[in-house]
Length: 182
Image: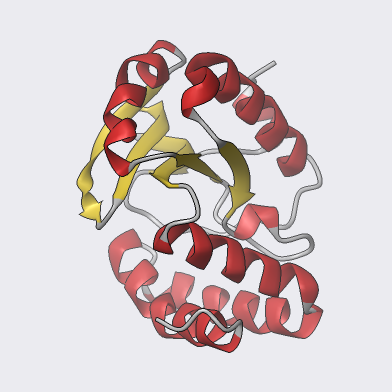
């Protein structure tokens, strides 16, 4: 079942608002990962839950972030039709370098899910997984990230792009500390 409202998902496009941690986010991810696996088949080497909804116990934008690893970055273009068939729109590959982005929700109004299609075990894959795993493995670090996000959400409530940029230094520090470098 893909009933986003029952999972407390959805955020007006371009805005920032954090929700209390929700244990249902993991099930929302699992349901969506299943739908994506059915749609993409073998194109998707691995599908992972990333972003703050993947970190237990911290506030997050109520949007499920999903990482899909493909063999070659260009395989992301093969995902457009299948992803559209399950309700996603293609946001493009020019927003984040080496990342095909898909969104689900009400186009141009709200988002419930964001999918990043990247090269499996490429730089973007490694960075997202390293950051997620570092926060999952260190409650103190997860709380520090949550505190940063709460402050930034207040400052940048109407600009998701500014909010995202303002978090980048913290993310980069965590990734470097994980041994990946930049």
